[in-house]
Length: 86
Image 1: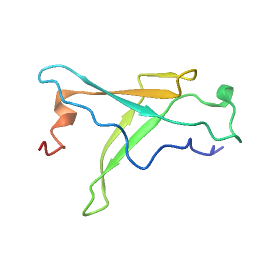
Image 2 (image 1 turned 90 degrees about the horizontal axis):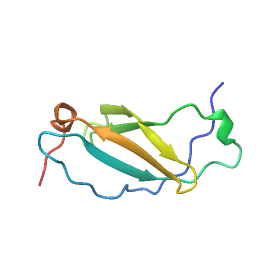
Image 3 (image 1 turned 120 degrees about the vertical axis):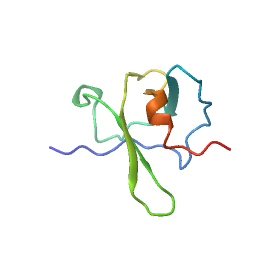
């Protein structure tokens, strides 16, 4: 069964990469009213290349907070290599 995705803003908040350690990406969201909290098992974050529109990275949430409406993804240093910092 496929569930309706949560609502997120068009742009996620900025984050900074920490060398040698994992970086936490916090994504604020609003639940879709057609989906209950008990129906959710996890969240995924898919990052696309803006030019080719190909997926370059898929992350699974490490934790989430329904009261604050935030999902937390850990970006490892090896995964951070796909980003151009600047």
